[in-house]
Length: 111
Image (cartoon, rainbow, N blue to C red):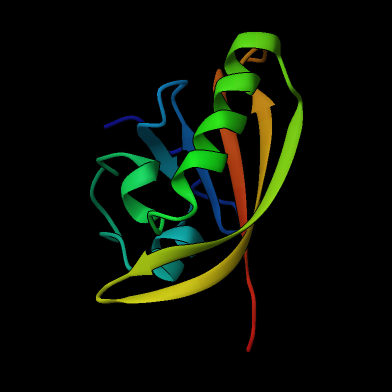
């Protein structure tokens, strides 16, 4: 199995393919989002988002892919098990680098 690019990251980070499919997740992101700690990440980033957040995130990610928008941030609700959690998500376009992904760093928002 290929070693994770995010395996040593202490920042909760997710790498996405241009279509929003989960490509990789750091150990801290897996913990934050209640994802499988050891197996491959699967599914779509959009499936983790609250429905009210999907349209804006989708538009911004489309701009990143189509016109090379470099960075965008959102305050979104993400699914954690059976509940929702607010996070600040900052997406960076790394499609033209060796990473070839959109990296999303997650910062939990405390109530």
